[in-house]
Image (cartoon, rainbow, N blue to C red):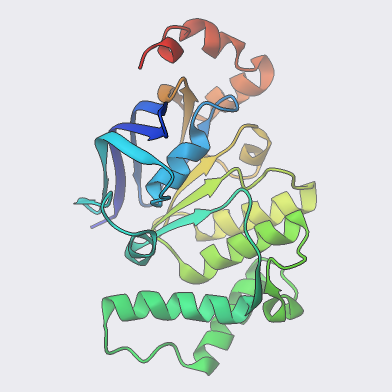
Length: 260
């Protein structure tokens, strides 16, 4: 049975400010969905809420993953279930190498499934990491560097996609992973998503621009405006946004932003 991320009438606030005002969305394992929209409309709020960021308060609605409500679960518990978030602005962790971080993450998932698991053997982990790095065209010395410490913007995004490749989540959320990337880095990100997508992984690509969708072909495109998803369609919807911008969305759904 495939895993499904299902969001029902989700309302989210930061302090006394209402951001999401009734989001409904279903992302099945095996499909790639793109979520687009103007800046400030709630796209990143949705991403952080799905992973349990404490600054975001759910005031109504529910989020189900594999048929289970996850709103009361801690972020690490959601990750162990098979959810993954690639951050727009990944943080640095000085003193922790990329390889050690990834091995610890794998072992956390293994022990969640079986408390008696002693962790992935080092030779097996090295083989796995080498294969994923070759897939993503990441140089071998990358594994020994401290996670995101002194990394360029493109290297940080490479590290996020490498994490995704190693952990093999069932649903991956990419929060504007294309932000600030040059064409080469964008291609690496897209290669990883395309290589891992398909039956084993569902993907929610959150982006302001259409350009990443030249490399990652979505099954469905959604448009968020005023804290809600107001349009859904095929890949041609993203092309329309690229050509005409968001003005027609704002005109068509002007009342949405006023409602709470």
